[in-house]
Figure 1 (spheres, helix red, strand yellow):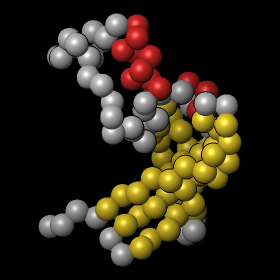
Figure 2 (cartoon, helix red, strand yellow):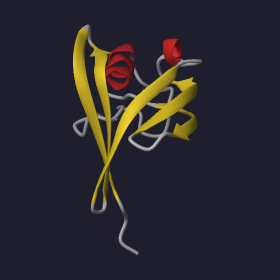
Figure 3 (cartoon, one colour):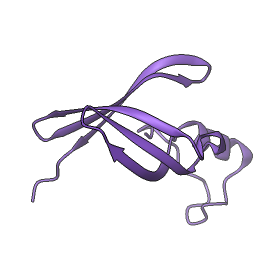
Figure 4 (cartoon, one colour):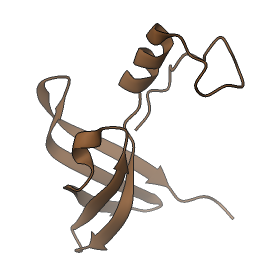
Amino acid sequence: MEKPERAQFVVQDDPFGGTAAEDTATFKSNLTYAGTYDDQGAKVVHSVTHSFCPNWVGTQQVREVAFEGDILRLSARNLVIEGKHVDAHLEWRRAAI
């Protein structure tokens, strides 16, 4: 998940060239993780091996799965974001070939 209005670093070609304020803004506008997953039909369980949030490494992140035509929607219920419990949704659209 990434906010669409993310500001770019002043130093364009250095991923570690941001100021402290730029780094903080970047961290707060991005939610990423990676790992293996287990497809369980109506849900998918991600076994997190890499994450921007170190607390998620080694956890399982459960997402509800819904297909609507060319759209795949993953939903996380009761996710804690900035101290609040929220429902988060991510949509993927099938690319036209």
